[in-house]
Image (cartoon, rainbow over all chains, first blue to last red; front, side, top):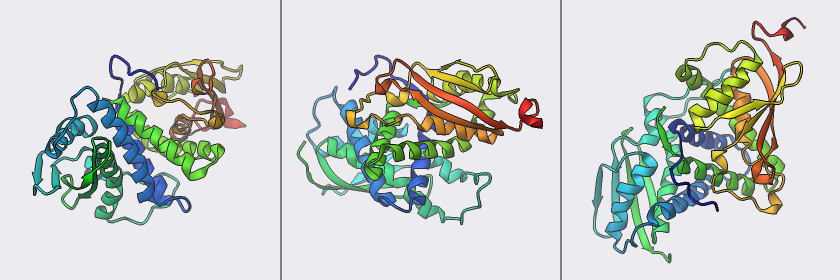
Length: 178
Length: 170
C-alpha cells in the first residue's frame, strides 16, 4: 500500500461513469460466472469499506448510529456521489431513508440512454426501472460497505421510480464488530 | 471536464479486477476480459473525446498516437504519455505512461505474475481507434506493477481506411 499522495489526484468524472456502465453491461451479457447482483455486491462492498477507511481515519470514532448516518449523508456522499444527501428520515428504530434528488451516478441514465454500438444489433429495449435497478446495485453495495466499515451491519436498497431522484433505504441489522 | 477524486475510480477498478480474478481463476482470461471491457468503453468514449477535445480529423496513425498520448490521457486520466519507439514504416509505436492512476495503491502478489492489471487501457485505445477506422493491436509490454521500469503499451496499426494512409491501395 503506497502512501496517499499529498495532493489528491483527480480524473475525469466520466471515467467512473464508463466503468460502472461497462461493469453492468459485462455482467448482464455474462453467461457464466456469478450473476450481476452477486458480483457487483462484492465489488461495491470492498470499495465502500476502503473508501470509508480513508475518509474516516482522520476523525474521532462515530459512536451513535445517527452520527454514522449523518457522516454517510454528508461527507461520504459528497466524496463519492458529488453532493450531500438532500433529506434523511428515520423511524428511530434502525431504518433510515436517504433521499438524493439528483443522484449523480444515474443522471445520464435518466436523461438519455447510451446509443447502440455500431456494428452490433440493437438490443431489445429494457424497461428503465429495471435498468436503473441494475445500475443501483453497485452504489447500494458501496454504501453498505461503508456502513460496515463504520461498524453498522445494514441492508441497503434503492428506489429509482422517480429518476433522477433516488431513495436509499438503510435497515440496520445489528452493530457489527469493527 | 468535470473531475472527481481519482481514488473512487482507482478503487472501483481494483475491486473489479479482483472480482474478475475470482470469477475466472485464470490470469490470461482476466487479461482478455479487461481488454474486452476496455474495448466497449473505448467505443463509447471516442464520442466524448471528439466532442470535447475539438480535435481535427487525425491525419495519420502518427497523429492519432500523439493525440491519444497528449490529449486523450490528459482529458480522462489527467496524465500524459510519451510516444516513442516508432518503426520505420510508422505503423508501430510505444506509449510510455509514467504515471498510471489505475495502479495507485496496488501491489500484486507473486501468483499474479501474468496479470496485465491495466489491460483495460489497451482495450479502450483499440475500441476508440476502431471507431475512427483504424484497426490496431495494443498490448502491455512493460508494467511497473510487474517490476518493470516503465509502463509501456505497444501499439500496432493493422489496417486503416483513412484517406491519407498509404495502406489504402494495397
